[in-house]
Image (cartoon, rainbow, N blue to C red):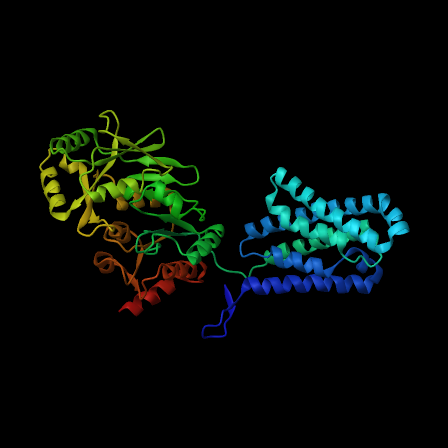
Length: 477
């Protein structure tokens, strides 16, 4: 969230920066209050410098990240401070009297510095051995501050506790400041459903850093969001690796409902057995490879034979090592249920196959989807599903299960049109396929996915989202 902007190319001052400044101010105000009460107490037990460093270090946009860094800062300071205190007490009890008497302050300093350097290795080793890698930097910083900083004649245990307590106080102040929010509406009664390609994803098939960050914040605030896509969990797990999706997803063109958190297929609309037999028989007769997708014991398996062209070969090699699917060379076992089939070829070849398949007795149990294969010019996907599997049916069932007051759809591809029509309001980008542009209620004058995410954020927090959507619709006319 940007609070102040200076225009032009100057960066904006964000809310995180302002909260950091407030937290640092509170660490200094606390020192002022303690000094007014008791200067000796303030000097002995509290350091605004270390509290301020802890406050700056721990302040993050996300609460979860702030808590994680607060833990690192607190535990690192505790471990490093105590380790340094023990070393200094050991040095003062065993070596210092003899060193001062025989070699003076310089000799004592040389030995202390040597011990400090050697035991730095011990400190790091212990943290790594106990798998506390995150604590190393903070622990080493506090350890060095206790062992070699000027202590102003304070006993080492006072000094160590000062550093540890100051850090802890700075962390707590940051966590308290970060909990403060200006009141905003949270429209959890709205369901947002989105496509991916040409919609939330960039041309590189990725989420932008802005989308990832904003989606995290909105989902943690209770945003109801799901995805309708032709993709499988293998690609979705990469795309949403850093986004905590809570709702089940409508994947594989609505043939499957999938729970990303539990990695479970919840509802599967397989092709009816008789229709599956006819499709298998047809392509065997043609000696033509098809990728047959089936789900067995919550595992996605893909059967294939010899590739018909270089496009299918690339399709296979791009996916063969994915965690979420097994590739098996051979024909689909008749006892297993096909969720859908994929083949890749030129448009005229695909049209011929579709024409032949429409003559099957079980044709009415099948649905076909054709769209370009992005990596090879003039090559197209042919996907064959059950006639009961569609994005429209999947969204309809989703709405019945969740009973949301309003559904807002983001779509850009021709195969997004089904769920766009079913939603209360459909929104697309100006770069969308013509079919999506024709049915969209609102066309945003942008081709960037961040534009959709910004609108979703605004609608989720808007006082009157329906009124705002009506304004956008009027602007389209």
